[in-house]
Image (cartoon, rainbow, N blue to C red; front, side):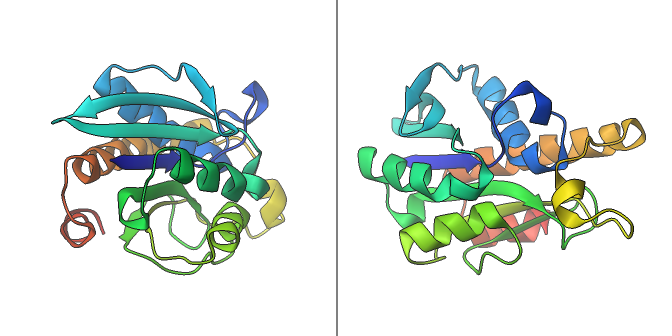
Length: 185
């Protein structure tokens, strides 16, 4: 069983914002597998299938970013997923724009969605795939993460999303986090 979570905010108004890069990565992965986000469960929309006889659940929590932990916890319980089966993709302002960073565990850092997940689960010992968004020197962080990705940077971020989906696919296929770190960090 693999549980692949992308973080973001529901609704059209957030679609092309920095904060929805996690959603974009898992949407790309679902498209790669030719599966649709057709089920509503555990305060999320999910796409599910099998890969080499192993169940894969791809999810986009619909709780808004700051309450993502509630959905992740429910999904883990419903699908009997262990921490080793979980990977979370999300935006990270502490990385340069479009840079990927994969880790086997860690703290939530400045990310409220990750803070919610680690608080609800009671630990941070699960894989994460961070997509860098950089920071603005003039815009407050809360406003910056909810701003639209500029057209001039869309191609760079589309490439990062494609690389993130590729890494998530390899995780689903059984590659270790250490192998993914060597390839993508």
